[in-house]
Length: 441
Ligand code: COA
Image 1 (tube, helix red, strand yellow):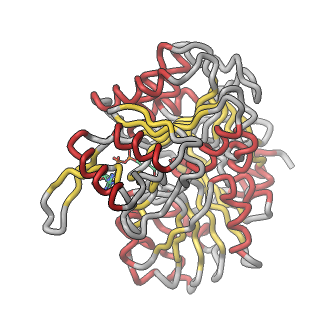
Image 2 (cartoon, protein in one colour):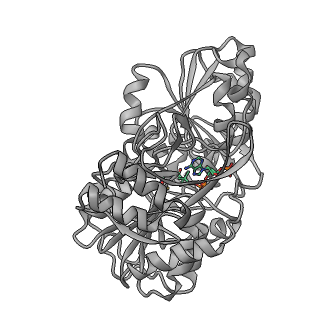
C-alpha cells in the first residue's frame, strides 16, 4: 500500500488512542525530549475506560503528569523511572513511583525481563514521514528502537517540530500502530551559565586531554562548561551518550571534526540529544550525526575501541576511598546511574583512555532547621544509604576547582592525600582528622 494511505489509516484522535490501552500493559515511554507529552498528559484517563494495573517505565521525563502525583492513579499506572528528573523527584513521595537501578547500555535488554509476558507498548515521538514511508525517532533511540524490534504496539506522536535524524532512529510507517499528529515546541534545558569554578575545572580537565581524543560529556552544569574549555583543542571526536549544546559549539568552531575516530570516522555519535533549540536545529537532516541504540553506544566494550577515549561526568559526593555517589543524596534518589559507569569503565577499557569525575568542592544545602550551610562534597564516608554510581575500583581522575586527584591504581592512603588536596581548604583539616580516626591516613 502507498505509504501516505498507510499513514492516514493510522492517524487517530487522542480518545481513540486512549481506547487502545489494556489492563496490565507494560508501557515504555520514550526518553527526555522524545516523550509524547500530549498523550502522556491525558494517559490517566485510561482509568475512565476501566484500564488498570499498567506499568510505565520512563527516563528523564521533562513534564509532570497526573499519574505521577495523584495517588488515585497508583493502581492504574505505576511509574518506574531509571533516571529521575525534577517531576519524578518531587512526585516520589506520593508513592506512585519507584526507581529502576540499571546501567544505560542494558536499559531495555534487562528491563524486558521485568515485562514477562505482558503486552508491550511503546509511546514515542517521531519526525514527519518522508516520501518513502520513513519517520525517525528524532531526538534519540536509547532503547526505543529495541522496544519496536521486540514487537511492541507503537503509539507515536508525529510532531512537525521534531528534527529528522540519522543512525538507528529510522522507523517505517508499517512498524507504527497509531499516530497522533501534534505541533508543539520541544522540551529544552535551561542554559547553564559558566562561573569561575566551572572555568577552573574546565581548564584542569583540558590540560589532560590530547588533541584527537574522542570525548563523552555527561549531564549537569559542569560538563557543558568543560566543553567551553576545550575550544583550544584540535581534531576532537564525539562518542557520547547525550549530545549537548556545548558539543554543537565545538563542532561549529571546528574543534570537533571526528577525523581521528576509530568508530564512525567523520561522524558524531550519541544515543540521545537534549539541550536548546540550536541543538535541535543542528540535528535536523544532519547526516554527520548518528544517533545509535544505547545498548551499542554505551557498551563499555564499544566505548573502549574509540581513539583516546575521554569520559567526563559529575557527582554529588565522593568519599576518601574514591566512591562516587552521583545519583542519590543519602538514600534519596536524585537522578540515576544513566551512563556514568558505562562511560567511565568504557574509557578505561581504551589503551590511552581517561575518565574524569568533576565536581565543586562544596555544596550549599539546608540543615535540619532549614538554614543554609556549606558542606564539603568530599567526605570521609558517604552519607548513610548513598548509592555508589561509580565504584572505587572504576574511578580514575577526580577534579574540583582546587585541582586534579588521579586515583586509578592508587592505594587508599594515597587517595586520601590526593583527595584532601583538592578539597576546599576550609575542610582539609577535618578530612585529615577523620581519615586518622578511620585509620586510612
Ligand atoms: N549533599 C547534599 N546535597 C548536594 C550535594 C551533597 N554532597 N551535592 C549537591 N547537592 C545538591 C545541590 O545543592 C543541588 O541542590 P538544589 O537543586 O537545591 O540547588 C542539587 O544537589 C544538584 O546539584 P548540582 O551540582 O547542581 O547537580 P547537577 O545538575 O550539575 O547534576 C548530577 C549533577 C551528579 C546529579 C548529574 O550529573 C547526574 O545525575 N549524574 C549521574 C549520571 C551521569 O553522570 N550520567 C552520565 C552520562 S549523561
